[in-house]
Length: 179
Image (tube, rainbow, N blue to C red):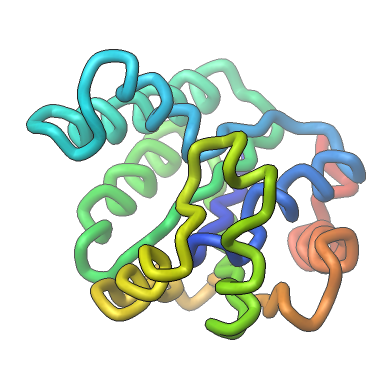
């Protein structure tokens, strides 16, 4: 299994790029909000137990996909350093233990572009951050950066449309030659 780990700040286009990529190559999508939406059926956002459940669901899903040798799992994640380092380490451990391969991709764009995108109707429908003030607070509060791996590629979604970014990822990791 290959785990394509698309990460970056809110509104940089992680889900948009993931969907564009999966129009090019076959694979499965585990949007970061799938686990959040599940946790919201049990807890209020951020309540005790909420983030623990979100992380447990993500780990279980990655482990199950690797165990069943899903050829390509594309996941989105809003990674903050150092807050999410332990969680990311657990993803790495699962992938390594299962003999899978982790493909980290950091997507970014300018703050101005992210603020322009944050109110898009699709974000409202998915219950994502839609407030410019909220997004600005997150930018100021968290270090939304690339995971600490030398093989992490960094792509600016503000300079290319999602389809071009997806093609760059497919070419870089040779995803078009999956088994």
